[in-house]
Image 1 (cartoon, rainbow, N blue to C red):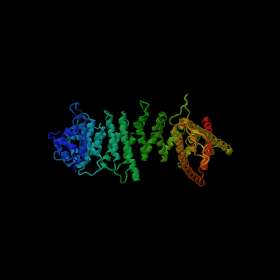
Image 2: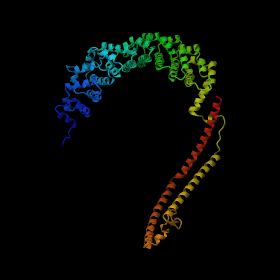
Image 3: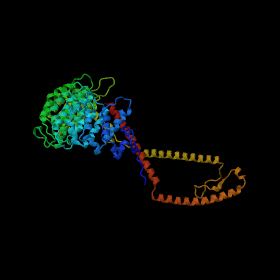
Image 4: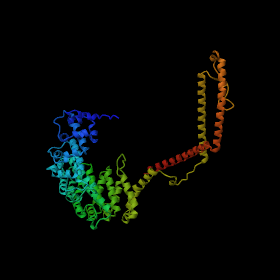
Length: 619
């Protein structure tokens, strides 16, 4: 059997073959992945250096589009899928110049090209996976590489490379803890950079990825000791930064660290006395020291929330509310006391009223109140109902809008949801129940809550006849009369359709000069006797008319006999079927039941519309 010739192998018949010729062929990636032997033999040190140069060097001009776009892309694809030991030797052998060329790409005073940075980082991801220990050893020993990566953090590809290096999962031969801490310090320090918003965003992204991989990182303890130690003060102070994206990045970083702490606490199930240490955790965090740092910045946070040059309540401020919420979830007593001293609900209530259309803010307000009540923080609950007169606040929030449009306030849905929670939870919490027995609460229910609940129930579930005191009677005779009329109207329509079909059939007969001289065959009641049809005068005058008519008559007689036999069998089958089950009667009964149910539903709908109209008219 003849083997099919490989078209790609024809390139190697050229003694002056250049790498660019192969890169111009779209088949090169498939051949490289299939370990084409001729291609593997062709790729030597010179060709690997040329591939690396396409990744790390900018083209001299834009005139050659292949040099600017095609060659870097194909070079990256080839080196990313490279698992050939011979080619890997060009990076990890005695001569590591090609690996160092990749490192040198990031050591630059100018910002690296984002496209080339993505290509270089993809190649380095593959090399890190193939030879982890050798790669890390060269990575940390290469001069100024760590500082270069920290400087290029405006690139998301560089941020991903830093994440890969810091979150190594497998055990390494050497301990790179000091170098990892140095790299992480440099990353965190750039969160205050205001030259490019992508820098602080990428720093926040790196910290988020580290917290999400906390359970798989090899030797994670030193990294988190730094993040929960020195970094906390920086994050807390940067939350009130004048730059919104710096504030958001700092708040997001702190929120992710506190969320990880909360997950670990729930995972372990219990914490030691005083909330100092979590037993058997991946790392140890001194809760008291952590919250002392956070509490020292709380007053600045609350002031930052209330003061704003614009009416917009941005995402960076929402992040502060989320941080306070997760701190409450950690059940740190000193933090709860600090919130009480800062009169936290004075701030929250003012924000709730000021930003009437901010649903995310209202949701955070709702969750905060729900949590302190569920956890039964008595001092905060008393602060809410007594010092800040929460029920009176609800009364003011639900008062009618004094404008010509009679506009509904945007936050009323959250007010209803919050009041509903208070009513449901009050039997479980005596302090809350005592607050709901006051005259102010009764007034609030009469003014708004009872009406809102009733309206919501009508909108969600409609009504039942049990909701009304009046008796509802249905006259079955009237319904039967309407149903008979309904059937009669359908019967009349069927007769009209049959008459129309008969007229159409007669029109067809007239068009073909066919005359029907007698009625249907009396034997079978349905089939017509073909012998009763006569052809027109023109055909009777034609030669051989009598013979044709005789042949036709004989054919018609045979056809009629056969049709009678078939029809007799069909009638017998229909009679047997009717004896077994009367489907027609069943269909008639079903139609009657559907009609009756429709009348009842129509009556119910009328009662519902009338009741809803009376209810809305009295609002």
